[in-house]
Length: 214
Image 1: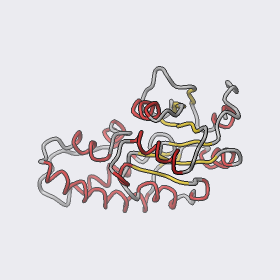
Image 2 (image 1 turned 60 degrees about the vertical axis):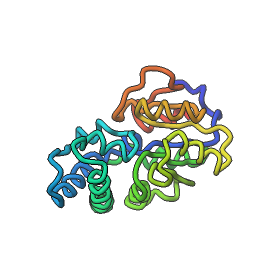
Image 3 (image 1 turned 45 degrees about the vertical axis):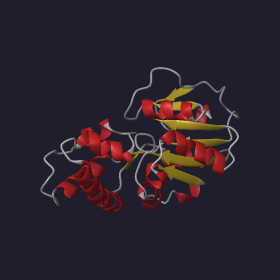
């Protein structure tokens, strides 16, 4: 493992889905429950489809998965599914990636930790509360807070917490592009949902690789 990145950063900003956990099965279940509450949605959703849209802005997801809906019905359905999503995740959670807690424990000793995700409001909070992880993270930002792109939310975290040398850790091309727009170096999680061929400062096969890398 390349150790040239040690002592280069003061903080780590994490993506959530495909980086810290896999919630696709619970989210698919929640959206199916939402679909069963209405009579205007023909499309079905499974975990594989949820994985395929990982990293997209929350509203854009519904445009991709439910193209037959009018903007008004899509907005209505999104609100129904958002509520169902938080309820299901609070109950069943997702799948934490291996060695998550011990990796956060190690990183917390030397870095300030944050989360920036393209999810709805409440989603990051459910993740943190479900697994008692709040004390590892100093702050977080999501698409639902201000309806802004991920790059802007990364910038907000950097500015609001006066970070000097942050690095972003994510698993999709969108994560990489957002970190570049925010002028933050990017570490690619090869175990996640996406693919990044070039531009990252490092790639990891497991979360615990960060313990050696950083």
